[in-house]
Length: 359
Picture 1 (cartoon, rainbow, N blue to C red):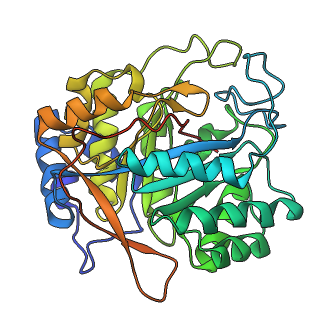
Picture 2: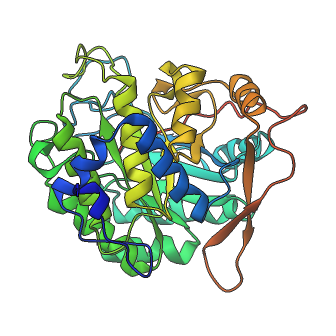
C-alpha cells in the first residue's frame, strides 16, 4: 500500500503533524487523481462555485529596508518604485467604497514597513474602523508586529492579518537575510493570541525545488492553527530584483501546489494571489478545480499587475462561479462569509485600487 493511500483521517478533519514524505507523495500523484482528491475535500467544506473576493490597497508604498529578493519595494533595489507616505484615512476610505462597489468582500491594507512604529498604529486603526463600518472584512499587512500592536489592531476591529512564511525554512536564507524565519512565526503567534484570523502563505517559482515547496506547505499546515487564508503567490519577476530572470515554474506544478494545499488545510481559504495576471483563463480554471476559492480583485497587486475587473467578471461568468459576501458575526471582530447575490455582473465598477503583498 502506498504512503498516500495510508494518509490517516482525524476526527476534526485537520492535521498538524504532516511529514515531508506524505506531502511529496501527494505531489507525485497523477494530476487527475490529485485534482479528484482535492476537489472532494473542497466540496466537504465549501461550495465549489463560490470564490471569496479581496482587494488590497497599498497604503504606504516603497522604501522598505528589508532585502527580500522578490520584492520591488525594497529600497536597495532599483525597480522604479518610489517611496510614498502613509495615505490619509479619507483616501483609503474612498478606495474601499470603490472596492465594495466592484464586488470585493474583504479590503486589505498593505504598508511597506519592516514593522510599524507604535506611532503608526493609531493611524492604521482609524483606517480599519472606517473600512469596517462599510460592511467589509478588514485585513492588514504591515510587517512584524509586537504583541501590544497586534492587540491594538484587534481592538480596532481588524479581522485578518497577513504575514507570509514565503518559503520552506531550509530555502528561506536564499531569499531573505534581514528577517529570521522565527520572526515570522512570532508575529503569527501574536496575531493568533490577539484573537485575529491569520492570512499566511508563500511564493513559488523562486528557484526552489518541489521538496522545498512541500516544506512550505508542511510549515503552514503544522502551525498551531491552520491559517484562515492561504495565499499562494507565483513569483512576479521585476527587473532590478535579484530574482529577475529566474526560470518560470511549470504551470501544472502550480496547480499541484494549490491542490496539495487544499488537501492539507481543508477549511482554509486558498487564494490565487500574485502572478495571476500572467495566468491563462484555463490555468485559473484548473486552480479553481484544484480547490482555490479566493482571489485578489482589481488592477494591480501593489507594484505588480493583476487581471482587470472586466476580465475577472467574464471569467467568473464563463465558469459559472459567483462571489461570496460577508455578514457581521455578533460580538466579535470576525465576520462570516455567506452566499452572495449574483456574482460579478452588469453594473459592477472597477475599483482602481492596487492589491497583493507578500510581506
